[in-house]
Image 1 (cartoon, one colour):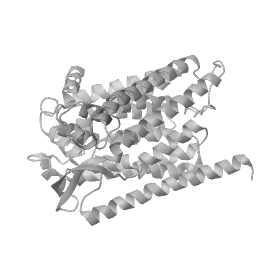
Image 2 (cartoon, helix red, strand yellow; image 1 turned 90 degrees about the vertical axis):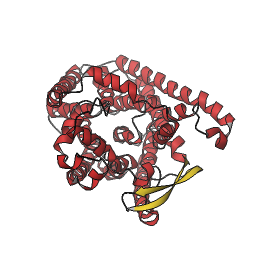
Image 3 (cartoon, rainbow, N blue to C red; image 1 turned 30 degrees about the vertical axis):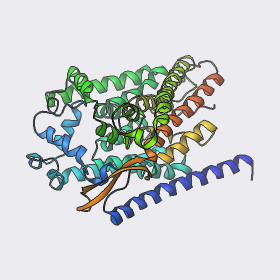
Image 4 (cartoon, rainbow, N blue to C red; image 1 turned 120 degrees about the horizontal axis):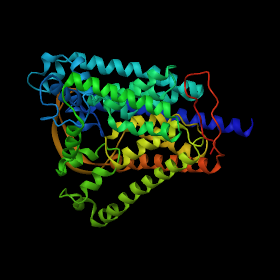
Length: 443
């Protein structure tokens, strides 16, 4: 057996091991649910507010006040979509009672989830048949998408369109532009994933997505009648909370250290449990880690303008998402979009291997409580029981944002090496396949 064959075998065994761990963690989650009566950390309050991301938004899709009472930060597409795929009669009184009434919402989320699985598999199969199913397991049974399903978040249908746009399943460029436009109108922070086309000087693709995105926005704005840019920007400024309890709840499954940074100077009794010295270290270290990543991404973008052939589009899209996920906090389930792009990387080179390993770890549905603050009685929706829920600091609160930053650093390092090794820009040859070529950097 040659050295390259041996390395390939080790890589496949490693990915198989991680895929098995993801499956085992899902089994653990269900066993814990039936044993304890609620979902374990990091699931939000053990399913007490199961599916309320959907029902709370759908209430204002059916009733007035989406941008004046609910203060939504999302474009009108979300409310148009929810109005179509929700039973209006279920949203007359209470968003919690509507969970047991609106069966259409459950069918819609399940339908988009099961439709996404073959699309994800096909996307990876085109890249590498050997690892396609393992990476599909990491994505489709991973914590981010399962958490989004439990919350009833619109990330589930958004991800379906995101995969169609960034994968190579669709042959039509215009259909891919439309899918990207829909995903951006669902989750505007995904606009950072199209900057790669601009950096790679693929003007037609950038313009196509931008125009399609504007058309989707205008059509849904006319249907909704609300959600102009000024209102959205105003609501974004009102979105942050200074309540220590709310900040702590955000930190339980966050994509970044932003909730932790907000929590450190608050009156939440962290110092009582961990002392003052760790807090002082974190107040200096965490912003430094975030800012270092921002500088690295800007360096990669500058290098990509200089050497457009060096960094593939999907990695530039991943770097754009890294910026959003580390500087802001769209939630831990938003890491799903980043993981899909990371799993397009080959198991080759230290940077890409580190990113892949971190991606698999982020897909594992498990956590461990380090410091217990209190035990609260909650009503678990999934088992219809009143159970004791431990409120405390977990390993994942600090580890998951660190893994996202480690992915960011790994992709930055790999990209910078590729840029330094790349030759001058060569004229592009006309392609017969309407799908853009999938390019993998050699650095």
